[in-house]
Length: 628
Image (cartoon, rainbow, N blue to C red; front, side, top):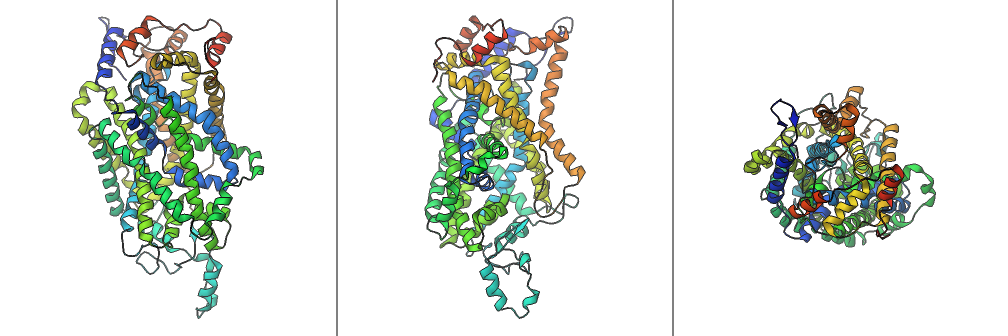
C-alpha cells in the first residue's frame, strides 16, 4: 500500500509509524473475506487452471518425448511450483493486502508488487482477446452445420479441401483424399497438393481473424471481434461488481464445469478410431529425451507458467482469507489439481490427436508439432466436426474453454483493481463500481489493434515477450526477497503466528535452494537463449517490431526501478545505510489481524549475527522444526 508521504515542520519527508498503523488497521477491518474456504479453493483452482493446460502442455509433451516430459514436469511441480505457490498464499493472507501492496517487508524492492500488477494488466490486454475468439466459436457452434466443416463459404479459398489438415507453417494432407480427388479431376497436373488447406484452418484465418497484411499494414477493425471482446468484459465486470462475495459464488460453476466437460469429451474421444494410439504415445516415455537440458528447462518454465506466480492473482485472492486459516491444505489441493488437469487435458487432446493423425496419415508427433498454438482453434474443431452430433460436442468444448478462461481473468483483473483500491483506499472505496467499469473500458479500448486484420501478429509479439522475461524475473526476485533478504526463518515464524504450525525443514530446503536456484537459472537461460518471435506463416518480424516487443516486456520492470530510486531518495541516511535499512521491513509491514499485530510487534524478530548461523536458521530452523 503506497501511503502518502508525511512532512515535518522542516519539510523533510518522514514516515509516522503510528499514523500508518492506524491506516493499516482500518484497511484490514474493511477488507472483504471469502464466504467459505471452499470459495477460496475454487477461486485459486480456477485462476491457476488456464487455457494453457488445454493446448500448450500437450504440445510441449509432443515436442519433448511424450510421456518423458511428464517426469520433469511433475518433479518441478513438487519441488518448485508448489513451494512458490504456498509462499504467495501465505504472503497475501498474512498481510491482508493485494499484490500491489504486499511487499513492505523489503521496501527497496517493494516495486515488485507493481511489477505483478503491470504483468496482469499486460496479459489482460491480449488475454481477453482469446476469450473473444472462444465466444465467437461458441456462438457459431449453434448453427445447423458447423461453419468450419465445409468449403464453399464466402471465406473459403479455391484450395479448401475437406479431409486435408494443414496448419500454418507445416503442411501435410490425407493422401487418400488427395488421390480420390485427383481421379475425379480433369486436369490432374494442375493439382498442387502442398497448397491444400482444411476448412477449419480457413475458418480460423479468414472468418475469425480475417487475417491480412502485417504489422506494417494492420488493416481495419473487425467488429465481430470487438463485439465478442465487449461481451467478455461485460461478463467479467458483472461477476466482480459485488466484490469477492459475488466472485465466490461464480467460481462454483466456472471452476467445476471444465472437469465435467473434459470428462464428457474424453469418454467420447476414446471411441474415435486411432484415439488409443494417441493415448499410448502420450503416456509412453522416450527416456532418451531426458538427456536434453532443454526438456528440463521447458518443463520448469511450463510449471511456473501454468501455476501463475508473479501474476499477482494468488496473493490478491489469498488476502481475502481469514487470518488464522491453515491454507496449506488449499494450496496442496490447488497444485495437485493443476498438475492433474494438465495431465487430464493431455489425455483428452491426445485422443483427438490420435484420431486426426490417423485421418491425415501422419505420425502423432508430426501432427502435434504442426498444430502449434492453433490447436484449440484448428485441430480440435476439425476433429469435432467429424463426430456424430458435432454441434453438441462443439458447444461443450468451447463452453469448457470459456469457463477456464474466465477464471484466470478474474484473478488478474482483481489484482489490477485491487492494487488501485489499496493504494488509494479513502478516495476510491466510494467509487468501486466505477473503478471496475473504468479499468475494463480502458483495457478494452487499448486492445482494439488486436482485433484488426493484422492483429494476430501483434498478439504473437505480445505473448512472446510479456509472458516470459518479466514473469521469470519476478518469480526469481520474489524468492530471493522472501527466502534470503527477509529470511525463510522469519517468514516461517510469520506463518506459525498465523496458523499455529511450524514450516517443516523439507519445505525450507525447497524454498531456499531448489526453487530459488531453478527460477534464477531459468531466467538467465531464457535471456541467453533469446530468439526472435516466429508466427509460422513465413512472416519475419522486423527489428523495430522486436524493439516494440522488448519494450512491452520491459514495462513491468520500471516500477521496480522507480520505487527503488524513490525509497533511496527519501531516506536521510548515508547511501550504504539507506540500502541496508531499506532491506528491513517498513513500519507498514505486519499481520492483517489486530491481535496478531500486537504480538508481532511485542516480539520483534532477531536475525542471527553471522552468515552461517543465518543460513542454518533459514534452511534448518530450530530444534523443534519437524522434517515433514
